Image (spheres, rainbow, N blue to C red):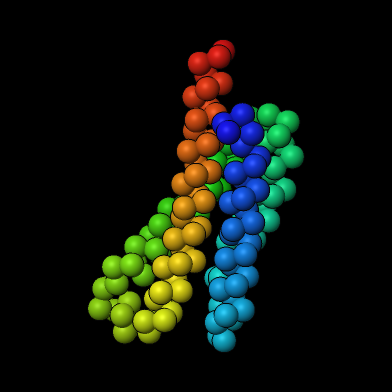
Amino acid sequence: MTDKPQIINNVHAATLIGSGLSSYFMNEKRPKTALIPAVAGSGLLLLSKNLEKGDQTMAHVAVGITGLLLAQTLRSFLQAAVPDAETEEKFDKATLNRRKLVFGLMSTTGIAAMATYIGGFIEKRKNS
């Protein structure tokens, strides 16, 4: 799988787009921050063709975007999974469960993408 990073990139991008749009439309307040994953996922989709061609610069851009989003989605997942008093006051149980699902899904595909990217970088280093 490390020889085809565009596949996991596309899966992660689709997850980000779907999660971001569903979070935006499921919340009656329509928070603009829910669109951040959708925009980032769209950017990752645009990078897929370059990943397929083996463009190292664009691969590093994809890794950077994925890493930043992964840090944020993991933080948000943990905040929903192990809420402090402030978080419990801010969100009802159904919202916390939805946030665990959405951020957990984005984190899972982000971890898979990072593992694939890093595995590919290591493999290329060994072969050169």
